[in-house]
Every structure is written in C-alpha cells, then in structure tokens.
Amino acid sequence: MNRHHFALARLIAHFVEDRQSCLSGTILLANDRDQSAIENYSVAIWFYVTTVCYIAAVVPWLLAIPLAVVAISLPLLSGAGMKANGQILMLLQFSASAYFATASGPVKYVAWLFLIVFFMNSAAWILARWLEI
Amino acid sequence: MLRYAVLNVPIWIEPVVIASWSLFFLLWASARRGVMRNLKAIKPGSTSVANFFRSYRVFWNFAWTLADNVRFKESHVIPDWEFTGYEHFEAMQTSGGAILLTAHMGSYDLGAHLFAERSGHRIIMVRAPEIDPETHEFEEKHRAEELRVEFNVKASDLALDLLHAIREGGIVAVQGDRVTQGIADLPATLFGKPTRLPAGPFALAMAARAPIHPVFIVRVGRRRYRVIAFPPITIAPTRERDTAFAAALETWTKELEDVIRTRWYQWFTFEPFSPELAE
Picture (cartoon, rainbow over the protein chains, first blue to last red):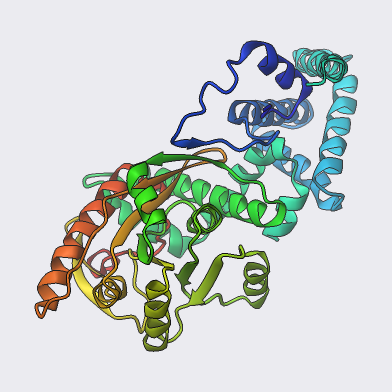
C-alpha cells in the first residue's frame, strides 16, 4: 500500500517507512495515493511560498501574499479536471522557475530549489516505474 | 461550486485553496459571531481576539469536512478512520434496532456512509430539510444503498416511520445538539447555559425500547476521522417519563460537553446555542 502522490515521496516511503506498522484493530486506513498528510501539506506550502517569492520579486511582499492565492486559483478555472490542472500548475511553476533562475537576487535560490526538486522527482518517477512502486 | 472545486483542484494544492476559502467564511458575520459567542461559553474567560482566530479554525475544519464529504460522494475516496470506544461501536453494529445520537461535529454524512457500508443494518439519517434543490438532488444521487435520508419536515409523521424502522432492526441517526423550529424539545444546561435539546431521540428510545448510542465523528487531520463511541444510554419504559428523560439527557449533555470542550474547533454550530449568549 503506497499512500503518496509524487514519485519522490513514493520512493522515500518505499525505502524508509515501516509500512503497514500502523495498521491495528481500531484503525481503518484508506488505500489511496493522496493520503499522506505530511506530503500534501509540505508540497502545498512549498508551492505557495515559491509563488509568493516570485510575485514578490515584482510587487511588494504584502501584495504578493494574496496575489499568490489568485495566481494559483486562476488556472483551476480552466475546468480541465484535477489531473490536467495539476499538470498546468506545475508547468507554469516550472516556466516561472526557469525564468527566475537566471534573475539576480535571492529569488534565484528559490527557483533553483524548485528546479532541483522537480528534476529529482522526474528521476524518482523513472526509478519508481522501474521498481514497479 | 463545491463539486466543481473537488473535481478541479489538484489534491496537493488543496490546503492552500481551503485555507483561502476559509477566510471567506470569516466574512459570514452572523456565523462568525455565533461561533465566537459559543466559544465564550465553552472557554470561559477567553478574549474576543482569541475567539476570532479560533472561529477561523472552526471554519477551516468545516471547509475540510465539506470537501471530504463531496470528494467521497463524487470519487468514493474514503478517509482513514480511528476508533475510540470501539467495543461500543461494534455493539451498536451487532445489535438490531438502535438510535445513533450525534452532534454537528466532523462529518456526520461520512460517518453515516461508513456505518451503512460496514454494518448490515439499514441506516436512517434524520436531518433538517435541504433548501437548495440542486444540493438535495446531489445528496439523493450519491447516498449509499443501505442509507436512507429522512428530512425532518413534519415531526409527528416522521416519528412513526422511525419507530417502524427501529423495530425492523434499522439504526436511526439523529443530531441531538440543536433544535429547529417545530421540533419537540427538552430543557437542558450546556456549559452552564440554559438551552433546548431535541426530545425526539429520547421519546423514540422509550417507545421502541431501543438503546441510544452516543457517537461522535471528529476530524483529526487531513482525511483522517475518529469515531468516538460512548456506552449506550437506555431508557426503560416508565410512567415517570420526565424523570427518565431528564436522566438520559443529563448523560447525553455530559458526553456532549466533554467532546465539545476538547474539540471545540469541530462543533459546527453557527448560532448561539443558548438564548443567554444571543443577548
């Protein structure tokens, strides 16, 4: 049973987690890929903070905080469905990261972090498929 | 709109979307004031500023339970379940004909679906009428096979149906922490404040000679709920109805207070529960 969404998290869980150990008589665990709270909150916060940083590179910080919510919500209005919207958001963030990676100032570190994690996840995806996780 | 969001928001960005939408709930002034006044009674001596932020936590949990409920109905994604008092929960599932008394906490709907799918009994959920026809249609379309929903429109007609259902081995699920207009009630004291609680579950238990199982379904984390089951309350048929009801009600209010006191952020009562708090 793997309860993680992203390949990197699935791979880490495969090697690190003591799977099934928390199964007991009074706990009923759902077998679903999006069940990890730690993964879900970490990715959501990281994605949001990254967006705030990019917007703050252009506008003041106080304005960037609510604008980041708008920037994340707008692509979701496409109505393309959960999976496609996820891909659209990631593609937009990847494009923004590629742009800000060459910028001057601390925002480039945020962009590089995103790009590194993105590529690590891509590599993990290939490995996860090979390992059939 | 909620259905659209569930179908279009990627799961991994859900916390950001829910956190921002919960802020909009804060603009719902009457509900926010209601929650803050209730918190004043639940947490004596608390400040208005602290209760303002606490009300955000109530709305945050409310938004999550709504989303989990719609996601379950739309995609059949179930959350994780934990149990406290599992033996009482199991006793309810094995016994035929009972009343499940719960509160406006966590996800009543998700819990009812869990019981309906796990126990062999038919579950009859009693709830306030759904005003929006589209929501009504959605609820009807997505309910489980073993789950029947009765809308509390005319209490006298409904009582007979419920009595029959219990005698046929069904489980009637009722929320016993709030009364709506036209519903028979009993005087009670909650957090030291006078209030009125529904009389129906107690009268039904006496008439059907069925136990009342206090069960609470609380959200403990992302897609994780806990079923808290207490020992059953029995009401023996007696001529001293008022005394029997008062004793049962006292047990129920004590359990209700215990659960709400520790999980105030899960009590989705958006109006002051006591007339004293409304002043």
